[in-house]
Length: 252
Image 1 (cartoon, rainbow, N blue to C red):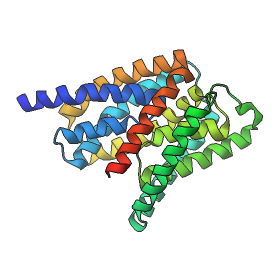
Image 2 (image 1 turned 45 degrees about the vertical axis):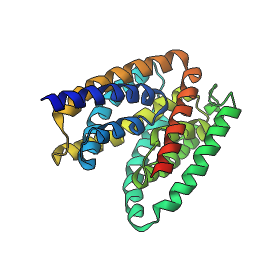
Image 3 (image 1 turned 90 degrees about the vertical axis):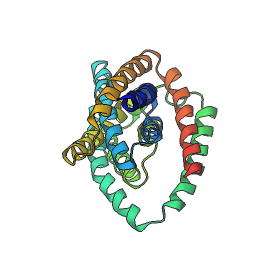
């Protein structure tokens, strides 16, 4: 019982922080999953239990974005479906390909993205998606979902962050709407993985459910901050996640 309490005291605050950051800029798993692993939970159980807490948190942050009308369903739905198709493709490629090469590519990409965000101060500050037709937005969203879904299945870290950046860079959405779109895509993949883990009995419920309460609180607070402050709040969160992702890739 004492060990369980120690684990919860260690894990829950980190899950809260992960949910707070993830609700705005994605990448919360870069904080929460290592917390479960550091507590001594075996990797396959840690991944499943982390998915439990993150899924419940994402439900609430997604609901906040929907309530405020900051999700473009014509973009988010096609991207979500494409991501569900792309994820198993990426997983299959992972078996055949040398993931070390992808790590090198990702290190360069993360540095380039971080520099771009720091230099281009107005990135995602306004919505220019209106320059695209509805059909083009759907096509762009499908491509985004498929490619990043493949990445998620192949490698994974920072998927939500890359979704937000892609929605802003290629579809022209402001960072706030891009974050909302990414939430719906993440929710679809999270629910699918959560159900799979639950059916197979991999979730440690007596840790996952208390942690989920903290994840929900973090997601609610973070999404409210993002909705209130927009790009001014989301941009610094990007830098935090990109730095963590950069460190993680070097450590692997």
